[in-house]
Image (tube, rainbow, N blue to C red):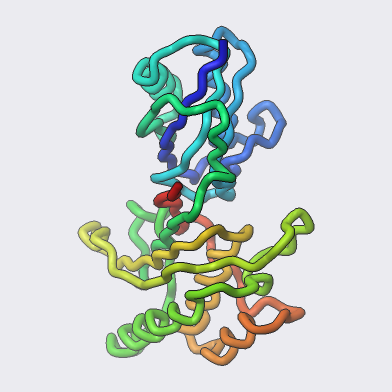
Length: 263
């Protein structure tokens, strides 16, 4: 008898090579492998399946990852949640666990995802937040220049809203049939993490799906715009026609957080 569970997972991705199991027996630890390892202990090492909704990259964090667990034993959802959390490392937690139909597919059933990219504009970064918040080093001139840079990025967020071919804002992946994606919303907000003594902001982006490294390239372009190395027109052109070279480098993965997946 097989049982199926839908779980909500949160994790700090700093120590992992992303979500997807690399098939190396955990030599390079991943979130999926760690959950599967613990499931097999609960199931007396019988075969189990862990299917995730989003293949987050190395160093990316999550509050709202969704996965389907397939188990060959009978167990109550609350007992499974308790058992997994007792075995998993401290930086991975099952936040919610419930039974689901056998045909639930977390990747195919989703209609939208929300990510946030956190960054600090302080010249000296906070050691407390160093592995979950990126750093944007702006000019050392007056504070008004910093405010202008923030407002420039905030205004430019509107450029990405809509349906576009994001080939110029992702890595080349031959397995992807289409590089067209729709961004529902992208805005720049200030975070309450400033309580930690840092001036923290975040981009919140929602869309029907994201290409690999797409968000990191978008944020990279916005960072370069704030520094004055690229222009609004440059971003518009990159959204309108394929280019040989990337408009900017992608930002570090540590600032990226998967917040929510909608169904």
